[in-house]
Structures are given as C-alpha cells and as structure tokens.
Length: 312
Image (tube, rainbow, N blue to C red):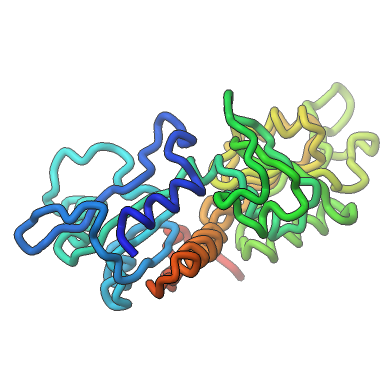
C-alpha cells in the first residue's frame, strides 16, 4: 500500500477537521529518496508501527522491524521546531526518522473526537452499554455505526454516534464506588489511580465533607469518561447525570467541582494505552480490505515517562 492510501484511511476514521484548533495531527514527516526528493503519497509503505508516543527508541524499533511508517497517538511535532540541532528529543527523533526513511503520522484529538475513537475504546474495555458522546462538536454530523470509518467493537450496540469529546454509558450492573475504582485500576493497569471521595461536596458548616451519609452515592451505574487530560468535561459529566467521571488527568482544584460525582484519574498514558489496539485493529482491517499484506504491528516499547512506587 502507499503512504497516501494509508493516511487516507486514517482520515476516514478520524478526519483532520475534527482535531482541536491547538493540535497538530496528520502527517508530520514524509518519505524521501536518497537525494532528499519527496516521494509523496505514492511512496510504498513496507510496514506500519503503531505507538502512543514517538521516541528515539520507537524509531529504532520501526527500523529493526522493517516499518517505514510510524502511526502515533501523540504528535511528535506539537509546536513549531525553530531548528533541528539535536538539542531536544523531538529534534533528534525528526532527524533519526528522516535519516532512516521513516514517515511519522499522528492521530491525536481528531481520534479523541472520532466515533469509535479513544474514549469509545475505553468504554468498551470497561463494558459500558448504551454509549453516547458526552460533549458533541458544534456541528458534527451523525455517523452510522455501520460506517467504514467506525470502529465496530467500540460502537457495537450503538445505532449512531456523533463526533465529540468523551462518552457516557451505563455499567451492566451497578458497583460499589471502591470496587469500581479497583476494577478500573486492574483494567488499565494503573499503579497510581486517584479517585475522589464518593459524594464529596463543598463543606457545609458542621459536616465533614466526605463523611455525610446522605452524600454518599450507594453505587456507580452511569459512567462518563474521556481519554487523556479531560478535566474540562467534569461539568458535562455531572450535567449528563454521571455517577462517576473517569479520565487520565485531573487538576487538584477540579476535584472541588465534583458536586457529588466520583472523579477518577487513571494517569494520562494509562487512559490512552488501548489506542494502540484500536489503531492496529483498524489498520490491519484496512490492509486486508485492500488485499495487501503490509505488516501492521504495535510497539513493544512502553513510552510512559512516569514511574511509581508500586510497593514500599
């Protein structure tokens, strides 16, 4: 398959017009011949490596596995590069990719906002039902679940979806708050999951905020979630009637806005790790439908830059 056919397929799943205005999704480095002439859309792809973050080690892995295209969730070039001297890891990655003939592509907030995208994959892992978009884009069209651009496993049972941030759905059975938090920690392998006191509200005179019996939700049934840094959608989750809102990162003071809704921060990487499975699955199906045999594989490198004390 060609570079153009693969990027076209990615943009059917997650059109670039769905990315946020601050983002830089799309093709970030193309393929060139030995004289430095761009090969363009017709360049042949020898293999695709899917990852969350592009690092020097990931590019080395792509080369060793015969892949000349890396498809990442997070853009390597997020802000304009003023020079390429090797002073930063972004500069070194760009230089290494160009020198080794590896193209770089990012599907970031456009994939976050796509029906069947990042948050839908999270919902599928948790087992949510009756899933719908939490915060729709201002003028997003309805995407039927049988659309070629949709991710079948994530949209199963949903008659239609619209592009937007986050999703909301219901658990098959209601769960106790702590049991649900432990389940999330297990599903997402989150070593430092943070969750708010269930039923936490602004303190009233004479009552400790986290110990009022009438403020404690008995169970968690309706769950909203958003991959990555989704603190801005807490109010949307509350307005939609969520018992719990799950995302990657939440700022300290955002917990005071919970208004009785349980908040869970999984960790940024932990919340988006299954994006690799989503992209790998979609691209393998794309290659199969095209009758081609270009290998598609997920990176074996964990690019989470954080480490935690798992035991004392």
